Image (cartoon, rainbow, N blue to C red):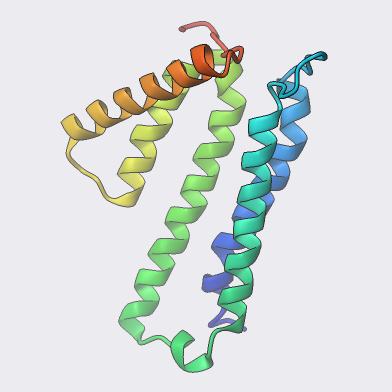
Length: 157
């Protein structure tokens, strides 16, 4: 069991995050009647996709052959590092969800993207800032003008 625990930890965290999203969505996004697709639709789809893909990952990790899961001592350190990255990413997403209404979508999404890029190993600050700004701008335009969603402005923007 101890050899399989690092392999099943990331899907378990993502299942917990998906369930957390399902509880947060009704409190953060008001329901609008009279629309075919309301503002809660896409967040619910994303939450269910996170949960379902995590369950698939959990099942495939559980059903793997023991020979595949046996690791050498050097690979065990790499697996621990990956587990730490998953925990950090999960923590960053939870902070993003709670700080989004306070600070605002643009600032929190930019900071989240930079932090996630740093977590996965990117160390070129100019690229991180540029990609994060482009990603945030595109997501903002899609949500605000294409999907006509209300974006949290917060105190900064």
